[in-house]
Length: 130
Image 1 (cartoon, rainbow, N blue to C red):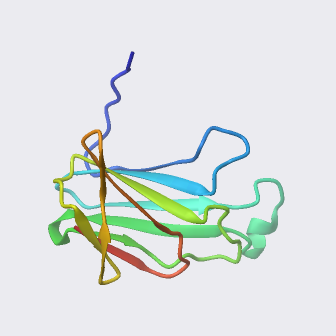
Image 2 (cartoon, rainbow, N blue to C red):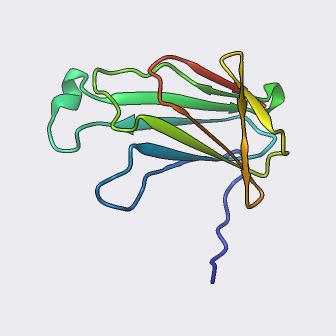
């Protein structure tokens, strides 16, 4: 059984594992489209007011289809993300077999008409081209 889900083209949707204890991998679903989009991912400890003192993790993710580019901006804040890996799941993208991450080629996993790539959650800028 399945339920159809309607998602706006160019959307960037982060998801975490519903299983406790949580996985160290953040899933980021990116949907193909012709319009540029941006998403700000935010994370903090979830219980204190330390975010007011800069103890948070914030990262802007840009989808720029005209340049065939996804840009994960350098994270801001002093909190370290609990996610050590990023699993990018591309919906509606052409099958490429390889993508370029910071000028280095990486293999792409094809699974159920999706393109998937797993990478380290670096604090610095990440440039992904397909």
